[in-house]
Amino acid sequence: RIQNSLRNFDKIELCFINPMKKTLYMNINGKNLKLKNNCSYIFRSLEVSEYIIKSNCSFLRPIIFNYKNEYYDVYHG
Image (cartoon, rainbow, N blue to C red; front, side, top):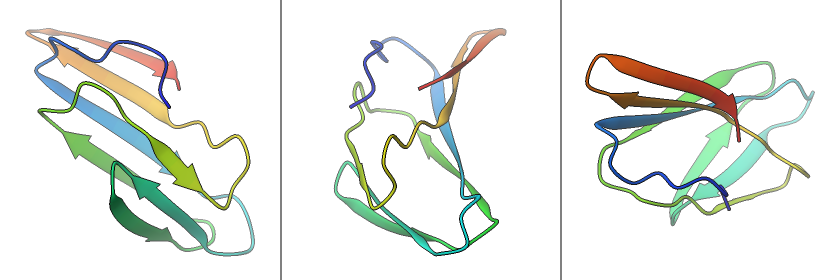
């Protein structure tokens, strides 16, 4: 579960990177995703106030991009 409040942003992006040699399986708020080895994926959302991420990777932490008007914030989830 992402611990920051994600309310009141214009757009939110979660960037996932798979450095492993095996396929990474994720479930983000009920959406199943498969990320092949050495690939990346950006999950975009406009209307979600919280993210629950389940995966076969322990301690999966995406890079989070929050956008509000002309400002943005980038941090590790």
